[in-house]
Length: 628
Image (cartoon, rainbow, N blue to C red; front, side, top):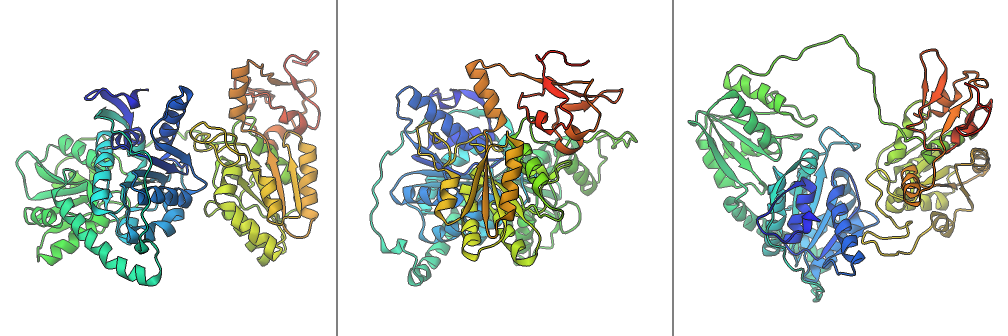
């Protein structure tokens, strides 16, 4: 594996996420924890692959890695490792830090011992998320030193350096990335791999127990550490001023991936300017910022999402009584919405610098391209579960849903998603609807979501006897983020056998009286199970258990098992469209003559459609006497 190569000076192409993994390895990381979430997933997935590769050869990988139950647990485990003097890394997507924030805020008060990097992967434009919150606010909120890399090389360097700064300050470091940085691939120069410390030792310290008196004593210490962090920021190699051409009156302040767009735009426009590139963005290097402000008559701040840098630059300018004009979001030049592109930055800078935009104008066309929304895979067991639940439901049934690939049940023709807030919210909102309405309720969550955040709301449903049906879609994996293991799978993140925790055992253990385990491959029995659950007064749980179809296809490929595709018997097909307009498997399509067919390249051989067709017009391809 190239990422664990010990060839110092070798240049390799790595994703930004992979570069973070490499940086942690070069820093001698001991413990890595995560709950998988795009766009951060590859950081942990790479650690998992390295661990499996090593253990498969009977070699100790040198570090401990786990996919934790949720982000809060992941942070707590890594914090304990740090308290024991070990180096730790915890990675998550931006909304994961919401889950971990309870531990995060107090953790900053008590501080760490071994270096600890906390990666928050933000998602401007909501490519795979329910919001595009700017987690730089968490650095301000909790008083955490923060780095924002621009390239994979810088992501590696910041991770590596971050461990050293973390230990010097005895504070965890927030490494804030965005989707574009996480998934960009760029050249990374390898440095020496550092040997992990192995086992640590925990020394008791009463200041780690945050009773109010301790917290009051620790807060001023935290603020003092941040003053030290500002001194580090002033000297940081990640904060630099670039001079392009002959410096004029306009300067640019930027950070993260926006710096790449700024450099490209400045070169394209051919303008002279100074650029203050900020890599350690909290705390800001105040003296450096003051000097930069004094050197300019106008400043443009280029940053995605919220105007954090812009507001700080305005504050500093006011404090030093500078009349510099600052352009950014408050002046309407940049948006607080979505991620930026080179085109956006070129367009804005051309206006501010007063030069012609060299990019061709956007050509408007009357042609409307067909919509290609994401869809549940052909053969996905969730589609069958949704279909059965819909058949069993009376009109007016409410369908709270959750975070996962099954959220795609929102789309037509299934339309089995009415409310979604966050991980685990399906069961909580189901309880709320049971209180607020007399409507029937069937909620849906995945097995990984159940272990992550679903259990407390099920307990609430039992304790208060809320009348709702809670469905757990158990496809034996954390499917949407890349098939990572969870407490219901047979192996852990290092590839070792692990104890399987069954969803049905957990819900029975917390007092759910009506529990049914179904296989959605049997649509009739699954429909009956939902009807019985709806008739039960009080909370009931249906566990729909069937492996993710992608896992099934992988299994068949390994074992050589043949997949029998299905075809439509045109002699029997009445064109009732149930297979397309009600079930919605994307393998079905209309031919030009209006006849219905199955795309054999997409068919997974699940056979669900044979139970859906009311006229028995769908057969396996090798069946005899199938009409044209």
